[in-house]
Image 1 (cartoon, rainbow, N blue to C red):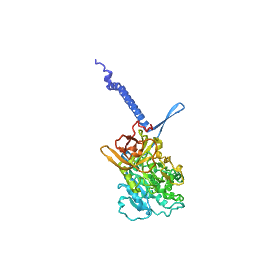
Image 2: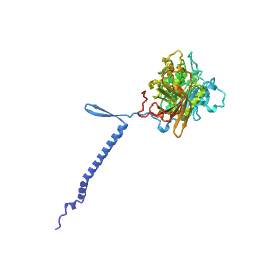
Image 3: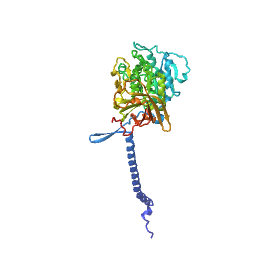
Image 4: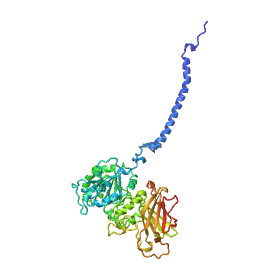
Length: 497
């Protein structure tokens, strides 16, 4: 008898199924494990990355927590370090008149450089000169006779001058970031202008300049207005916006006095406030700028205006010669120009104030830095009847006491020592006749010259503003004081005692 076949023999697929059901749980577990790992990884990655990019706002409603995701803030585009503004990307518009051109072009030649771009806008043509290659190109302003002007104290040339930025824009120059307005009697320090403008994003609307030194001027016009003589800068996008609406804007303000207030009125309509930079100097003053320049703000010196209204900044020479003298320190270390440092010769009880590239002043007695950083009133207000309260900043009187008069040493020459990587500037005493001082203390009149040593720091204004420190050094040179000026040490303090 044949044996009955086994069930397995009757169902050959059963073995396959049993093998399948045996491996299936393993596959399922592996899949679940893999999915779980991926979920955990994704959750951690999303949490780390999205919290950086999104604003997560958590709120609790009725005992349950809800999370709302706010859109991220849109940052303003900023110029990358590799695309810092250069002098070539700044275009100047200089207001000038044919009547004064032969005289004032000599000021422009002192600061204009071959690689710069700009236009001198005149009211009418002038004869070609043999020095034209040392100056910006000259153009005639457009006709403004259609615009109303009814200010009884002003001149309608203000309309022509107010349109200089727009007319310069319409020339269609390429790779322009900034338009800078100035007068033919404005002296610019171009490298410092670049340093100031490099702080700002040229792709945004910016109107940069400063107000007047005269409080009354600012009251009559505006503290929010950039004075054109001191110079102001307008970013390229803002200049484009201004050009589109300026002619309509000008028609709305026929009673304004000058060009500056017309620009300011249009900026107000565009909603752009003045960004103040204290290195632009209108200098609405008369007299001697010694007090102002020797106590310059802790900021780059960008411009000096009203050169024909104030005395030459160096004595015993004319204005052009004085500015040529100023170009010596500008070419050596423009960033440090006019920066004030205060220190003490404690053995002789003297206070020393250094305005680098300009003056050194020695005072008998010990004065606080707070007092020395205030400009002495060597100058007069723009409004001759105004007293010292008519200035828009703190000042101190020029002392009348013979023993308290400062001994002033003006820059005579300067040079750069490549081996030591430092500048050496020599200052010579300005001789004035004064009665003898009866105080029983060291007499600064015996110091005939002062030597100032300083290491150039081209990145001075890339750091938070702080005065440099000066130190009176020992010397065996007869009739000479030696001073070192440089970055203050970590624990260096200018202390009275």
